[in-house]
Image (tube, rainbow, N blue to C red; front, top):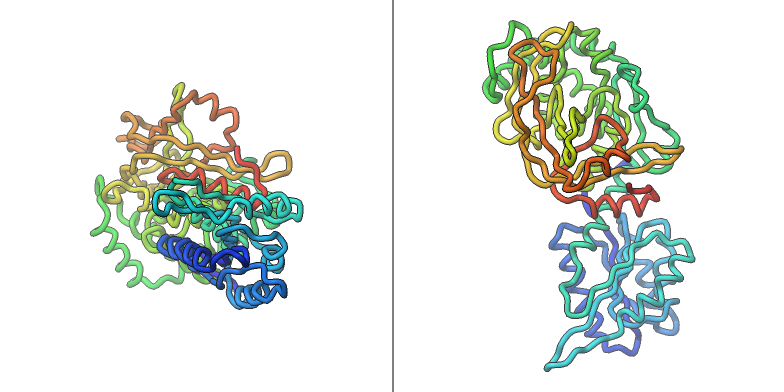
Length: 455
């Protein structure tokens, strides 16, 4: 069964030596599991395991965990435990990412009490590495707050990995503008990430456009006239063109069950349908929570979907226009999803070059801490380039070529906090995916689980 719902799902098993009072093991494992649940993790649990000579507790744990469905296994070490007892439990789940997590002691009547949790974890780390387990080693520090959020970050990355193994991305056309940077290796993508891209012709969309009932077009056109802010009145038919294209794309996406979407923009919609598709994609994002990027940007679409599963929100794509010594001017000559908009969605009827009028999204973009990220192929391997930055509203500017008055494109000045040359020496594309917040730890965990180099 193909999994479509996004959840953080993990198995959970605790460990403690047979001679350690059970209440010291059970209580702290219970607290750790409950804290993960509070943070949105769905757990498949089994009672803590000790090293009973017959191995009955280990066998019981294997049987109970095997009845559940989870993406990663939390190996919660609450005290000293001989290595064999842990390996006996986790070996059947070796194909899953694991979190080797050592708890810490507590204070009682003015002194510190420990069950030698880190004797257990340090005895396990090297053997698990040598046996080929895919795991993260996390230790709670004495007299410090438990590292629950770090644990959840890893489990979120593991669930994102599982979702990406079923990812199905739709793409109308191929290699817009004959760009090289938007190409991809389908076998490599499937092997390392699991995603598959399906291509279809724009003719399919044109055929769907012709079949859309007029009353459906009229109803949605009226809706966006009410919900969007128009800088000026559009020409007759401009809104309806956007609605038709959005409805056709939506129908194709729903029929095929795509998780993300890209399309041939310049050499496709604009050249063949004779109008800019920005309004259609703005509307598509209003109607569907689906990541999208134009210009047949294969790895851009994959990046968007990875970041959606890591953060829980559909991100925006942007491209570079200018650099200062320590910042980048990023913008989009078409659309941004509502998740990136500060205020009301604002559109401006406009045309670029020889293309007919379309609804250009000119919304103001949210500012604050951002992480810009890009999946790319280097030397036959996949890499991810990611940087945290501070985004602010840029000065007033315009892109030459738009019909006057030129629009203020949705844009950000992304301040790196260090020389731009540090970023530019690794830049992978004109398109980067913009996500809000500091998401570097999530990306590190995702890369570690999947054997992808993070730059």
